[in-house]
Amino acid sequence: MIELPQLTIRTVSVSDMANNVYLLTSRSSGDQVLIDAADDLPAIQRMLSDAHDDSAKATHLALVATTHSHWDHVRVLGDLVALTGAQTAAGEADVSDINVPTDVVLAHGDAGTFDGFELEVIGLRGHTPGSLAFLYRDPDGPAHLFSGDSVFPGGLGNTGNDPSRFASLYADVVDRVFNVLPDSTVVHPGHGASTTLGAERPHLQEWKSRGW
Image (cartoon, rainbow, N blue to C red):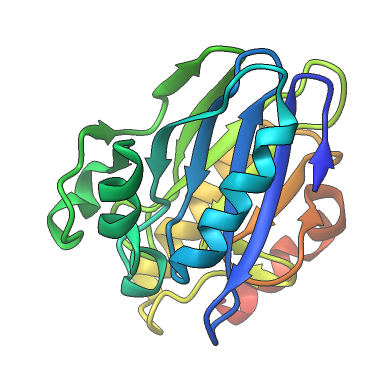
């Protein structure tokens, strides 16, 4: 758990693919956003229950945001929405591949405003056509980037050995992430451990040369 002045970030790793599910809770209002309802509904329910302590107000899951349409990131999306009544959001180019209706269709440059915090939407095309990252700019510390399967410690996400897909993802990651965000930015990927842009920046040319 990461406790920020205005926001609490909880994480649970689910499934045999070690998918990360993130829960952001406003400390002032109790508004919540869950990123990637990947699997293991009971584990997500436990995280939601534990998060009751993250705000003095009653917590409320306002939105389930999906970073991309791959099956391992949406396995319990329908069940979670049925349980909580939360709205759903995903990138426009991925909506047709998600078997749960999308309430909020997102594009690069959009922002979601909740009571107590805001998330910026960054389009990172390549892993899937509509892959997104979500950025929280902490006014009191480093920014937090929830990168889905687009950016990991040590490289970019899988682009199927397709040079055009890799070129698209690399360009978006450089132009929309590394060129505009500071090294202190914490990257929370869709699988595995977190990293920072500063730790990854020296390897950008290596990633480009090897194609992943």
